[in-house]
Image (cartoon, rainbow, N blue to C red; front, side, top):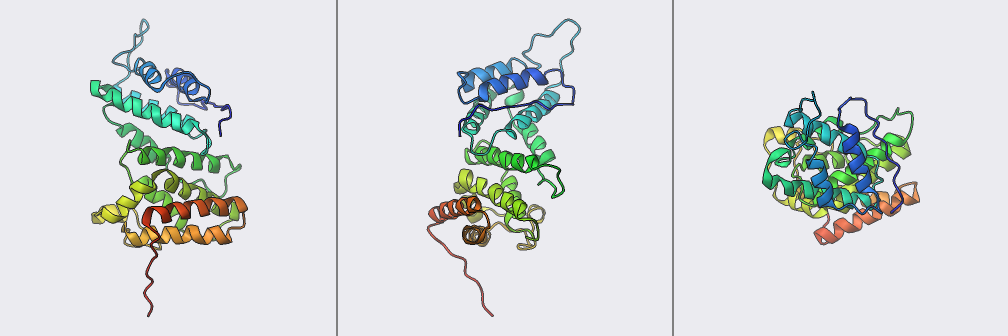
Amino acid sequence: MDDELVLNLRDDDGWVLANRVFDILAAYVQPGSRHSPVGTALDLNNLTPMVRRLSPGERAETPAYFQIQFWRVFLILARQVPSVHVSHVRLVRLVRALRELSVTGGVWSNFNALKACLQSIWREPSPHEDTYEPFHEWVNLNSFTSRLYGANLIKWYYFGIWAMRDSLESPQNLPDDILDNRILVAAQWIYHSKSRLFTLVRSLNLSIDQAYALRSPTFPRGDISMSRWLFWKERFERESRLAPSEMIRIEATRAYEAMNEEDGGRTRRIRRR
């Protein structure tokens, strides 16, 4: 998908640089844009409090405040980019370019503010939403975040586990359109970061506190294991046959086949009493 994007800041926080940051990002992310990742990263860097030329009477914000506000605006935009749109690739390239600026120090030396901003918005929309737009944006956000994880630009695996848990391990007594959306959310993590997730389930040792945060009714101990991976794969296989929507059956099949390719066709051994 390479359609022109219609993007809106939708900002009510009053950050003085919000419009300038958003305009730079919106111009860059369009599929026909001639702006390069490196050039755009430098343009954004020129807005940081350590570099920006201040207007008379203007006081520079702290680097920490800039980071939080910057990533908040960035995610407002990223959530509006459809999950299948080519501009997600451009966003990932821009994040990589910002990371490469970290060699000079400054606000790009770590992405802790990005993690904080993700944590503040990381929740599935309510079944009582007035429109379907929040559900579309939830898929888009997972597409963007899973691409960052798959590209090894972030290490916060728990966003992926939370998405898979809430989508595939939670009670299914919800309307079909919400369940369909959950399949799309989980599929993003398989499409874009299956290799890192597969490595994770074979090697991650969690503390009790870490495992507690990843619990579900299906996996009450919160362990990240091959058994959990194979459970996800079984759910995709089931939805590939039984989902009411043909589109969801196609997406579930694609995710199932990607997992099969990654793990060599493993199946879960079910203990029989």
